[in-house]
Image (cartoon, rainbow over all chains, first blue to last red; front, side):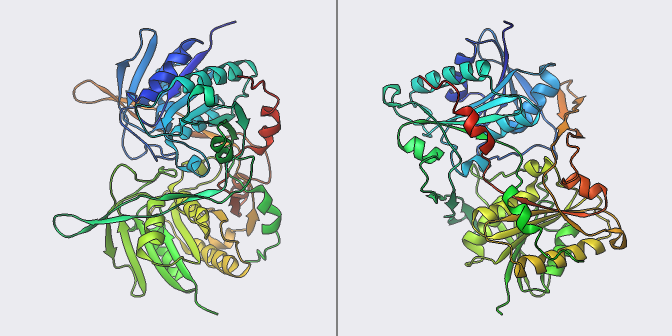
Length: 256
Length: 256
């Protein structure tokens, strides 16, 4: 069987430990390209760069890996990789491993998942990986085992083109991980807690802090799986239509 | 009945004609707050500002409207408005009127919709408005009539808290608009067409262009409604779970 081509991106930037661990495992499976932001892009959601132009610089990461650092967002990286740099479609797109979880409503704010989603929009199978700790010195041994298993599954099951998965990994030793659970996105939100400060000229500025509030008691959610020591695997889509509301809205009086 | 409080934002910036038209109509219904980006934020998706702090400046827009220009993204504006500036929850959040359509997959890239989505996440009813032309000198007469009707419906039907609507308005005279259609997000994508240039030092840089490709022949989509001369109203959600894939994924071999 022809070796697959795998494109890798992330939102913590091309030098984050998480993307290096992801790349190391992906190299076991095929030809690997890394096109990732040249600086951290956390919280970028599905932003794309339309008001300025983009730059790319070659990066040497591993002997057998083509690497590029890009001045744009994670979604830009995937667009630039598939549209300009690779001159072919990858068989699989991987994003991460993010330093920090992307479960529940963080799916919406996540740059990591925007790279995977951009792949799905382009009709390419994609997976986003996140570890539930922000520490850049976290032990990534368990993550690597999870990534290896996920790539095997995505290539052999296979994961259909245009579909993407959100994989969250609990920050616990491999021996303590109980296995995988297929989950749905938990209902939750961030409660804003802005930190107001004054600059040296007396003018206010604000730091966004926020505190997560889980609004979902379900046992089939990503949050619940993580709390129980499972790797959470959530299938995501990019059709944002609330299909349950269509019938209700049709009862409204639309006369102009 | 108590007059409603309406919060307005957008992604074209606080001085765009679209947000002024939206504000003008909203004033007919209640107390209006405008908290919008101080510069254009198109294509920002659901980005939030986590690496830097935010600034706000008071802006005088209309006699009876409290206005703030914010250095952040549309989602930041809503967070800052509800979390700091307003000291109360608005009854309704309106975003736009965007100069350019936000139909089909543009839902994902749209800053306009991220402001509405942020409202929905916070449990507030919200509507995003977009006009299918980029021209800042477009006639907004039809838009204003559409906005008036949508606010009436959202307040009286009412639009449940936590739900948001994506309203796209065809750029044609009011007399030619055939009415409203409740639609779903059409399947489509942007085909990347990067414009590669060289800077004065011979280094390449890239402009993202892109060309929209509609992959959906349905007659119940936003794209179809617009093409037929209808205002498209699509209910959106922020649960990204692909519920149809859950059963399929459970058939995978998850043994570790």
